[in-house]
Length: 436
Ligand code: HAM
Image (tube, rainbow, N blue to C red; front, side, top):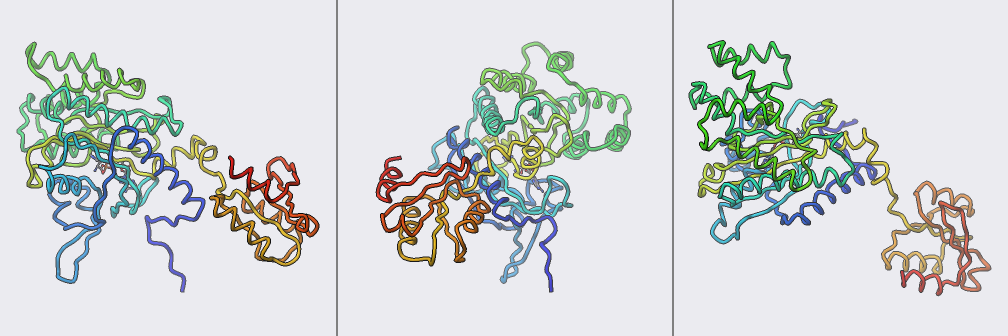
């Protein structure tokens, strides 16, 4: 009986594993150099953990299960609630700001499609415990900077991707100024979040279902189509008094910080970014491919109430999550993987004449113990067959051990890329290797 893999999951053959490891290694290196420390939590949690604040979409996509004691559990669809729980547990002993990162394996029962799977890896970076206004804008900017720092390191440019930045607070402020009651905001966010996924008539219709006054509907649509900071400033100026605080100032400050950090060309204000998750309270952002053909590469934002919602103190936080799936598709499309990942790990293939014996094994073993990934053939074939095997395994070099050479304690080292061969004494070969 053949059993296929479960829909929306992936098998990682060695070539795929090389890509996965390369992506994850890059995430970890960039996190560490930007001052983040690694953490992790359990793969399953109590079901209610993800029902409190993650939002409708995630709740619908939960993989839930019961343990033997009848407790309702769920496989984690995101790690942010776990992070909030973990930080709350030690809130008094953790030095602030808390700058943590993680690369959890996540599960969402989504309809599998390009870039969206049921099991994936997601890089998370979060900064918790920065509470003053200017500091918050710097922390938001640093989350975005670290995200771009990784994306440009793998070779993506501002012609390939854009960070679209907006603010939930600014949107809330604007909607309230139009007379929309606070308890309606969340249901309107759900509609506004769909702006780029729906035809404009359907989008308008859905807003009309929430807000009956046509004038207000038009004002919302105008606000959602602003595409520059001067245009936004004008709308905000009409609405608020001079010197009055407006969340607009936070958006401006974050964009100014990103300019100062040297990644301004990657970043734009875009009000269509609302985000599906329920816990965001301030700046929100997503990274998209410029061609607009793929789903979001990553998403994040400020969530100042989540720790309190999970029974902790009111401590502010900001962070983002980037999945491996859309990223990999984009890197493949831009031919950025071939150059950087598909390198064989095998340094040496040891070719021998006659029967495999102790002398050959000792050379293989010494190479391996010096840290050089090495292989040899299990079949007693001639050297040309073994060299073919070496090529198939993408070995960088071959060591050829002939009968006569062996008697003189010598070997031939063949460079597989150039074909160049060199006859060397075994001791000389290893002492050269040892000194490199
Ligand atoms: P999210 O928007 O749900 O946010 O997911 C962030 C990213 O994870 C997406 O942009 C995408 O790259 C990836 N992703 C999401 N769902 C899937 C899927 N089904 N298959 C493949 N990749 C997927 C969050 O998860 C927030 N917890 C991020 C965050 C951290 N906010 C603050 N801190």
